[in-house]
Amino acid sequence: MWRGRKLNSSGNRFLGVLRSRCWGTQAEGARLTSSAENQFSWTPQSKPWVFSDYRIMWFKSYKMTFTCLNRMKIYRYPWPRLYGTSQSTVDSSEIKTFLALAHRWWDEQGVYAALHSMNDLRVPFIRDNLLKTVAQHQPGKPLSGIKILDVGCGGGLLTEPLGRLGASVIGIDPVAENIKIAQHHKSFDPVLDKRIEYRACSLEEIVEETAETFDAVVASEVVEHVIDLETFIQCCCQVLKPGGSLFITTINKTQLSYALGIAFSEQIAGIVPKGTHTWEKFVSPEKLESILESNGLSVQTVAGMVYNPFSGYWHWSEITSLNYAAHAVKSTEQEHPVPEFVFKGEREELRHKDSTNPGVQEELKK
Image 1: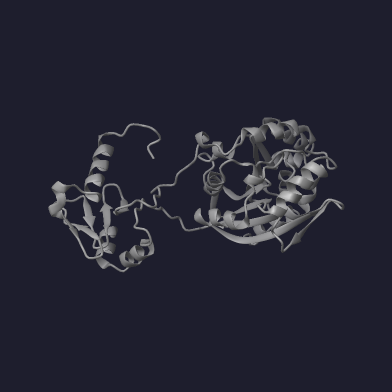
Image 2: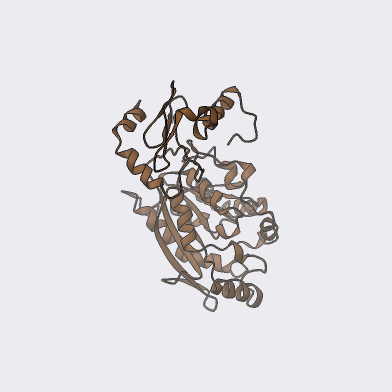
């Protein structure tokens, strides 16, 4: 919380108050009373704090609400937490793998053939869902005026089609050689040269400067390569505007995905290079949805995708046990969560009681 820095005198006084008031000492026993339900209340001799009947302590000077208990279960920051470069989600071993393949991005019959073919599904998937939020669009440039961040853009295989649809796209990738390839390829099209910008960086490096900047963030075939999925999703959410869309395509974590996605595709058929994927990093739709929802993103669609290695084409499927696509929308309500300490199993009860307690509501309005 304090990023390794020493606390100033105000911080030490704050912790001292919290420690003495929430946990108490024998010397303070006269001011601490216990009910039959083991609920505690205090009668403070002076403010700046106010205690309610439901264990809510309101620090007016700090604008925080604490629920004081005998055990801390959940802690949330009272301000938006931006993740910096010290919390990178980039896996250095993955960098080496993609660096060796950087020169092969635009070979439509090579190791990235399946990604070229995937554009037949993922480009319309992104376009159609974004058009639901646009009242009017220009013929030939339906995504005009929409700002998109393509995370892990590689050589620009998905970035360019989105740019051709009229969107302003920033493509980022931690592999500098990938960005060089992408820059070189877009230079052949003057229109794309104006609509697309590439940067050699990770998502965490641009979170602060691009907070709530983009109408859409795309992470296609990326999340199965990061080392910290939750931080990655948090960063995606932070750069999205309220109401913005996050698009993800990835691989489910099933026995079938190991058999076909790794054993067959990498070791037998050679559809993708060996070592491209790590099964332990695959993520199920259920887990992904849980992480998205916990970060204020509402999942709109989850659809299965199946690749036919013989025809070289993808098609949509109700089966999500292999590849799947997900679309989530960031909440338009700006919530500012506060630190909470709650008894196990009592969080919802506390919320209900406090929301119906006029005294607490009056104190919180002051």
